[in-house]
Length: 499
Image (cartoon, rainbow, N blue to C red):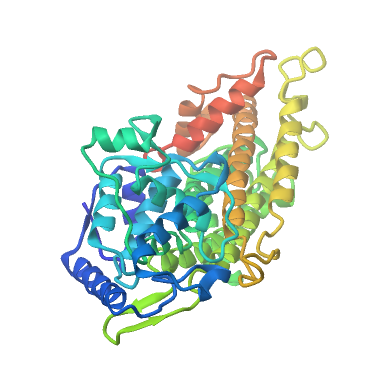
């Protein structure tokens, strides 16, 4: 059970809720803070004081005062009008993460919602009810208004949710679960949609997949080293210690461990003095990507426990202060950094693929073909990898350098952070396919060298991978192999294979 307080959600907690279906519970202290915050909102409404977000319009309409008997209608209209997202929906995983993060931020007690709102969001998490949220439509400032509105929409009994593996009208699900639609009160609509949870949730799912992918890339790179009889001296601990980057040292150490008993690696001068950069510089390149990933993780961990609403309610002083914590710039920059970092894993992987298939760069059969000339072998696999790598370069263009004013120039600088996060996730899917192609080629190369000469760690991986993609004995439809290997790598339990 993960206990939510609003302040100490951890990376491990998020992983459990997203991937192990862990249940969540709300701490009593945090709920007390929520009640205190709500009481101040009710006091303001009762006193008929004019406060932004409670009884005014929004954005450029912030100077329009709303009558007391129209406050609830104001919140309803806000959600209906802002639920304007378009495009294919986020995955259930991202939707679940968004609900989790939004619940966590509301629990800090600076947003003025009733406990009922939080209880319903927790019910969603614990009963696997995930709002259907379109991926496109957020500028990443004033919060992820459009995506988060689609979550709020379901609280009203509108829109759709994922329920028992299907997309279903929310109203039917609420009836099935004996739940009543919620009628939002003052401030609650704005509190539900002002925040960075779409970009942060997407970023968290993206980074969790990237971390696993980075470990997988090291295993595959190790097999490529064996297939190309790479020079192991380049991974010597002393080389990496004098550079001083801990991530670089860690990658080199993991490669050394993976290949510790391999009879396929060589010493400098044995076959050649040194390898090409795509082999020799694995620790430097992969290590730099790990540095970026660690930076991104640090920013996501701050943001998932951050208050990103506006205005913010401070019950201790009775203040309600408008600010800009909804602005997604910290996450936008982090996501753009992640795009570049993970794209590099594919860039260097594609170069290793080229070395595995190009007969001018190795002593293996041309394109790893069983009958060179009659059969093309892995020739076009490198084309596919090159295409994916090129596509990544366009997706890696930073989204955060763009800004388009909105709301009649009231919101005149925006982050585009959700676009950055979405593109990062797209890049990750491409990278996994490139690594799948390298894996297929590396497996074939070590067969020519002698499987019995592989290290114990890589041989264990080889045995499992061959259950997914068989040896290339003749040309076949390789797109099936690529997709099968890609899916296997995504679901792979690396810890089990390492042990």
